[in-house]
Each structure stands twice: as C-alpha cells, then as structure tokens.
Image (cartoon, rainbow, N blue to C red; front, side, top):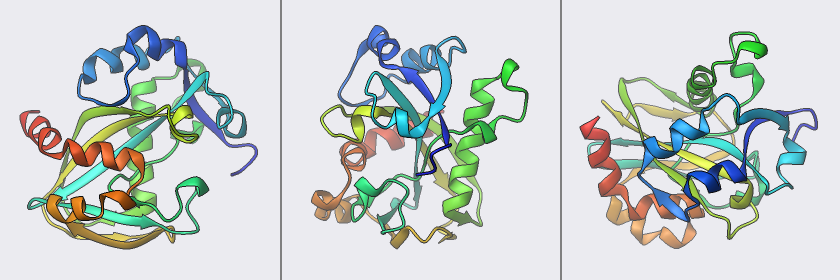
Length: 211
C-alpha cells in the first residue's frame, strides 16, 4: 500500500457507544447518524490504521444484482488488500481518501465525501453500462479477523436494470452473476463479509425495494 495514503477512520469507541455488533446489522440509521458526525471522523495514514484496532476504516461495500442474480468475483493477486487474495466476493468497494472531498478539508461534508467515494470505487473496478438504484441496507463488522478488526463496512445494494457490467481492475477475476443457490455452493471460498451478506441476501433485497 502507498505509505502516504490517507484513509477515513472513526474511533472504535464511537462504534461501541452506538452498540458494538458482530456480523451484519440492518439497523442502518442508528449507526450512520453517529458515524457521519463530523466531530468523530478524520483521516490518518493507512499503514497506521491497518495496525491499530482502536480505529475503524470506513469501507463502502457495494452488492449488485439483476434479475435475481448477484455479481461475484475472485480477488486476484493484484488486489489492494493482499490478505483477501484468492477469496470470492460479492462486494465492491474500498477506502475513502481525501481525493473524494470536493470542498476544503476545513469544511468537510463527510456524507458528500462518502458518496463521492462510493461512485469512485465502483468506477475504478467495474464499468456499468446500465441504470441502477442505490440503497444502504446494512453495516458489517468482524473483529475475529486481522482485516476485519480495523474495518467497518457500509453495505449498499445496487439494483441494476441489466447485467451490462465489465471489469476494469486486474484484481477482479472470474467475474459473473450467480443465483443465491449457486453462491451458497461456493460459500466456503468467500471472504467473511461476503458470507455475512450472503446469509441475509433475501432481507437486504427486501430492504432496498422498500427505499
């Protein structure tokens, strides 16, 4: 990772005050109102954040579906997070950097910054030639793994009008759309966050349709 990369973090104690959870929670508003308080967010060097579990790096995690099938891929050797190489994923996303802020840092609108980051991360990894809706449907936390202990996922569900999606990043391999049943057959090969989401796919889909 670049030594000078800055990533958006929130102190773990903020999450603990809101209610520490393990796995996936759909109580989105309870957490987002706390996590996007400008007084609790700041940037720090990624190398430091990756080794300090007293902070959580905010990661948008975008699940895409079309006609009942979900976009999935295997993380190749060029993946930015080397600890996840070889794992299957149903989420696209990454770190939030200062570049996502289009206004001066002393007057940061973190919700706008976050939304910019979601669009940037998806556009860097895949090309989407179709319309979609975007709903935040859950949050992810897993303190049982080295990667999970320093990250907090914000799960988006993008409902696509068609399956016109092609890869851009070399780290994405074996990309395809699969049914929930097909994904269950390869569940053991998935990264932890994707396993959590897979277990709640029906619920997440229903939540996104209600928004």
